[in-house]
Image (cartoon, rainbow, N blue to C red; front, side, top):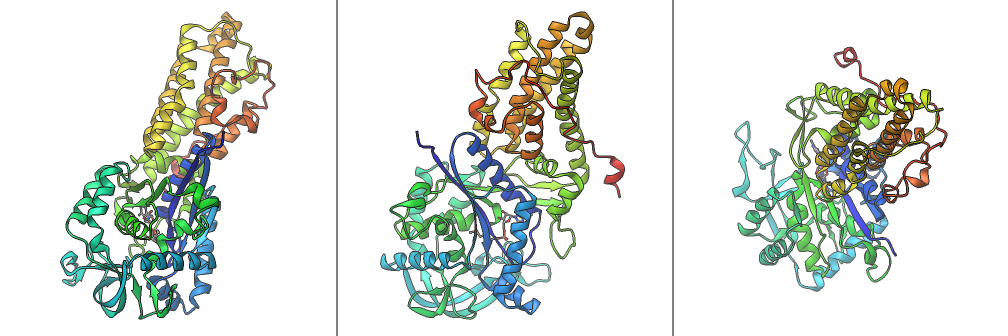
Length: 517
Ligand code: ME8
């Protein structure tokens, strides 16, 4: 049977500045989901990349005194380096300055023009370069110094220039109908109202070209204009599937996307503008957009001016890669805002990774090494307690599947941790160290049940902590070809007598003194 396709994307990040923890967070969530789906038998395409046009990037390049293309080459590379450092498994990395993207945007534009949804006029209104967004007078709020600013706090400037417009005002009802028919399109559910009330408030036509700078993709047949950077950026999701070729190949396989993962700041662009542009071009909108929350640092908004930007690469160097991957998805219910604190990081790392999971594996595997001839123990008949433990482990993936399809990563991890805590409870109740003298065959059975439970746990945790779980599975002599979810069920349990390598700790404790330097 052919595998079911699953296409998911991160936002493409602006290259005006180096990546920080927020960018790492979104991509991490997608990476975990992509890995999960691959292990679960899907044909996954996972896309990330960089958003390189527009006034914000052009200004940053000018401020550095370098040519925009050279500047974007340099910063885009930093996002690739981050992806390598974080062990992200994307299948493609798109840059909007690539030729394939120009072709795709040009084609999409023409399709919208052909259907009559773009017209030429002139724009007079407010623009925030930081958000690359237009704002109506009524949306502006009072800034700290009495000046009007965008709702995001970004400075606005008055722009007056000839512009092409997209007839967004005519799409309100069709968008509302689309949300109604596709109740899973906007997630989490709490975000839906926000979007619906924005649309119900009345949509204005959207300016989709600029003439006062030229760092962008020219409008077809009118190169006085460049396309609005958001129209250009959103199109990346279909460029990467070979658009405008739609009849065969990747577009036919993977579109509509299963999931666009974004931060809450860019919800409107993905759930109002993007589906309207697509419908206007006769293309189906994506299936789902999930908007996650915002990270703060020790209670403060993360910003360059406060000097509290968290570099994810520093975090990884301090705490370890899989520890950071685990923490980011465990600490905060996905969708809510979260606060980074070293204290919370160390607590999770020592409590849940070193103690709960690391100790479980180390206790069991060292007993096996010492008392079972360094091989998978030979078990006897299973008791009800043994069966309950094995059953709990073998159904883990079902609970996880549901959580992952809802992007409830914290909930998925909690499901696994319940099993880990149950396994620790089982060790204490069965006390294999006492059985060692009193009933060695029973000790072997208990250690078998535990080894098999650890195998199941390590397999389902691979998407979250790929290196550490690979290490754990190596220690159980599970071959790399036997690590996907099809090996969780009956008939794939550990084979008694299989020789095991020497055990080693997987999750070191973080020494508190280091945390306070
Ligand atoms: O908006 N907490 O790019 P961008 C959590 N180029 N996530 C954060 C975050 C924080 N403090 N800061 C940033 C753009 N993010 C456009 C996107 S898509 C077609 C174009 C994450 O570089 C979050 O995912 O400003 C947010 O949506 C994204 O970075 C914004 O990245």
